[in-house]
Image (cartoon, rainbow, N blue to C red; front, side):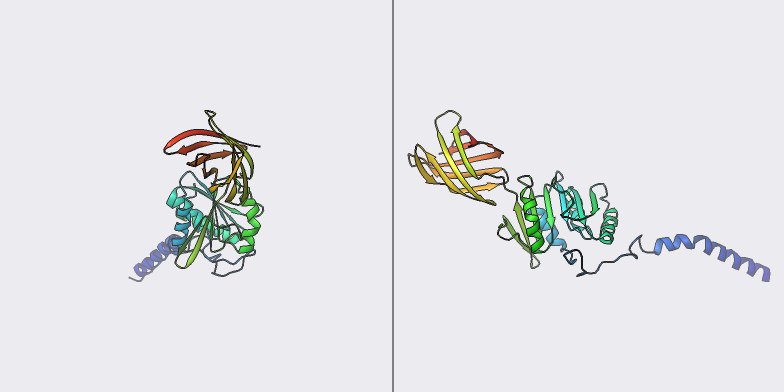
Length: 285
């Protein structure tokens, strides 16, 4: 009987030693979780880490009209929350740039866990050195001085690029939209095309010709229109990405609306008067 008890004890011990590694693997934290755990408010390069609330992340991406055709860059990606949301919720391709290598490694693990590694890339790097010029959407939660430092780079991006920021603005560059969720603010800007200067406008049929002289500060537009030697101010002039337009009163006191798409030194559009449209082209002088 003693031999049977001894044999049973040895058998149990053998099975325990055999399956111990498997059980440990099932119950232990995922790789890296026990290595680095960020804390809210911890210091980073010129910033502290405070995660953006999930509801605000969604609102920012909605405001930017993110789709599966977009390339989203998150500047200061933290744990990867925004790039992951852009990929999971909207099917976008996303890139997060994060200076802290431990945080970047955490973001990469979070991307893997979320199942979007085919859509999201995390770059350990400096947002002022990495190239994000191909982005169609830029997201960020930085401090005001960093936003201002980034502003010249953002304004050189392709017109129509959407920029959204949690909490902080761009100084005198007014946002196109403002949103608030859970007492947190989010702002949206659309990169405007450059229209400042003098342009000639011609109706394709040759029935109408004029000259506009435009001044511009960010997306705010002012200027004058000259027709047959008569100068008048533009009414409701705007620029939205590559889209440009204004309203004016013609020599016969009719109200006309001009809408065009700007492409460098040219613009093509139409003139609307009482429901009738005529094609118009413009050239920078």
